[in-house]
Image (tube, rainbow, N blue to C red; front, side, top):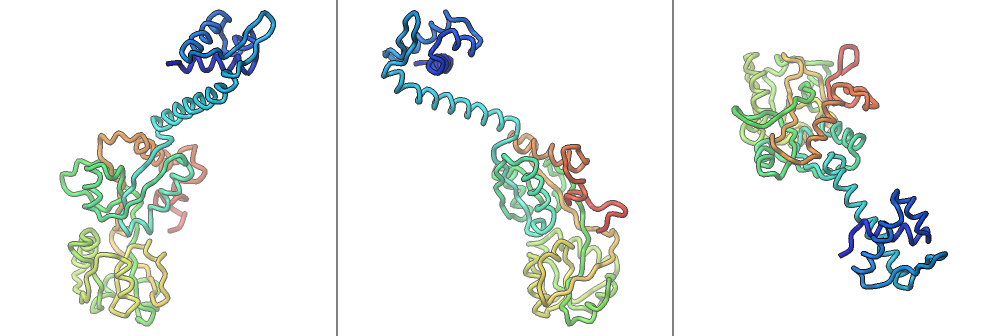
Length: 318
């Protein structure tokens, strides 16, 4: 079977119709060039070129073979280029898991980062709860996940993303909606829609911990696992709810969101998690790109806080 080097020699001679110019173009001498053409013709069992002391021309077989040779070389070059890009993490696929709540907040900033800095990467998105993401990372279904907390003893690698505050979601007719800001003590005696300890363990623990430290016992009228369900109940007048600030983007006419003073001020955490040993080059490139962006790398057109990857700094607003 012929070799790619032989095809390149043939295409050069066929396009130049001159062995001397073709040899110069290929940065080689004429004798080895002629030898490569002879080997190619022997492999094909066909004469490709007619040669004389003054003229080189293509035979009918040579004219038929030239576009095929060009096509094979283009495919070979494309395959080599694609392979190099995948190896460098410039092309390929990144499988990204996320919780529903993270889809409101940090994930848009990360997708924007991928679009701007890693345009050759195809992103496959999977909405999954935390434990399902951890299983997906271990089984290889996911490359990286956005989740709230790692279980004790977890061997997964992680990077913290920007924390966020909690706000109070109130029905617009609730008297508390007339306040500019609220404290947890203002919720004493209120009907509160809480988080399920099973389906939304992280938010259940965060909100319960804040209320317990204040010694508050609001009436929990419903416990649900998804924030959009919680907001639907608020809109229906069942009670108030503590939701991450990013949930304010889910605007409903019947709901008013009010800032909530807590300690710490931004108790809701989010982390990027992956399995050490994952060999997907796109994952390594993504982590490196995120770190460079978050550290304010020169390649970034905007500051890391403008991208939403880091929390606002002093004087930059909330």
